[in-house]
Structure formats: C-alpha cells, structure tokens
Image: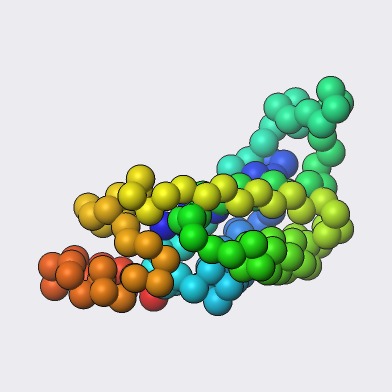
Length: 145
C-alpha cells in the first residue's frame, strides 16, 4: 500500500541513488509503519527546471520532494518517526541538506484501497488478510520481499 512518490530535478539522482532511496523508504516504512515490505511502492519523477516554483520563484535543483499515501491508523509518533528517518536517510543518500528534503504523509482509509485485486485490511491485520489470498497470488508478493 504505501505509495511514495519522489520528485527531484531532472538528472539529479543517479540510478544507484534511486535504488538506495527505494530501499531506505521500504525499510523505514516496514519498521516504523509496521507494514510488510511487499506493500511499499516507491516511484520517481523528474521535474524540469521551469516546472516547480516556491514562493513564485523557480525551485533550485537541490530539493527532493516525497509524498506518500499511507493507510490511516498510525499514531502521530509513528508518522513522525517515518518523516524524520526519511529526511535523514534521503539527505545522506542524495547528498543534500536535510532541510532540502520535503516529506508529506497523507492518510487514506484501508477501505478505499485495492491492491492485488483485494481491498486492503486495517494496519496490523496484514497477516490474516494475506493468508486469505489465493495461493497463487500469495507467491507474487512473497517474491518481492
């Protein structure tokens, strides 16, 4: 479920950095959000220099923006830990200041999310949900973990 979308200036992040960021976000969300690793998706988009503005001025290349849709039900403490760890880890990987990593978490009710062809459970009910999936379908996420 959690879908993290990362934006940075075109050409700013290397393929290796994107891989490291995806690994970091997956690990952080699995640990702090208590969700299976196979639920975590990370996408990357590049922003052209004339396509993003802050306070009516073109944003510089050294920023990274991360927006995540996550299942509601996590405490503010869990969300703060996710935010803090992502900012710290991504700033190190991308070699930018921590203040240049912008992270937004948006809650979505599990009842409004369908993945693997099934509506998702509430956080903490993942294992019971997973065991109810058809055997063949269970193999797909297991291969991603």
